[in-house]
Length: 122
Image (tube, rainbow, N blue to C red; front, side):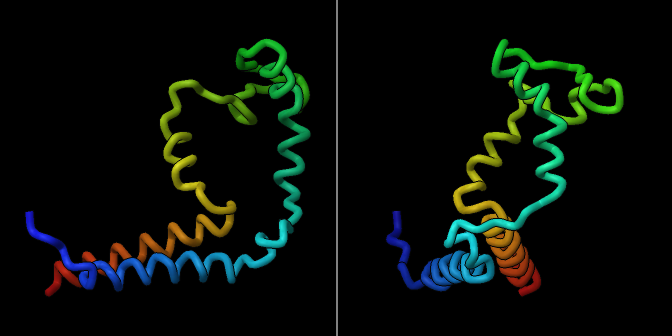
């Protein structure tokens, strides 16, 4: 197996590190532990309280809630499916704080697309 020179990967490594720095500089309040008050997130916590309490007490998922609109299906609010494989992907991608990791993933995706696109056109 050939030795792959480090110089070949150096620009890509620098780009990834730069993307991480840009993400944290742009969302610098995250480093201080601050976050934006989000009304929809606060409302969700109130709406899903009955479902979350039932999950903690019984370990099962409630499929109906009486706390909203006189009753509605709980899958519209907060149901955790055991066979949901996307949650594992989300855990891997969530290695930074929430808005910063999304910006990093977008920057990395743009970098990969432009890199491979330029290779395809060359």
